[in-house]
Image (cartoon, rainbow, N blue to C red; front, side, top):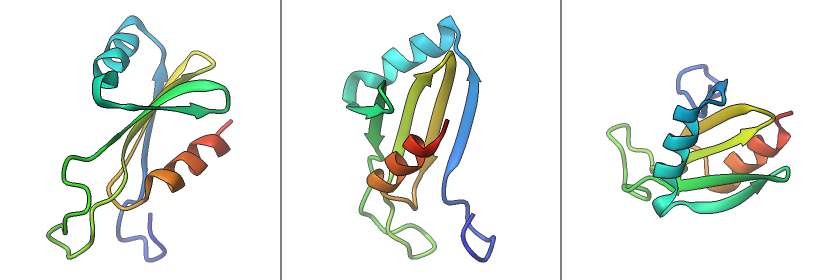
Length: 94
């Protein structure tokens, strides 16, 4: 959340890796940029409307980042935090 606890900055979901998460991961990789998350293969997809202004007057940034780490499927999404900051947060997760 932001400093005023008003807006969600980053959403993170985790689930046990399954055949569904592997299939979903492969389907999302078509237009994704491959990235490294602590030695794990990750994928980042920028939002289609990135750079536009949302209904709150803020510029849309970020996108969807996902990877599998130690048997856990992790998905991170943000429209307020940049790709680089999302990668920084992802790499800080253990």
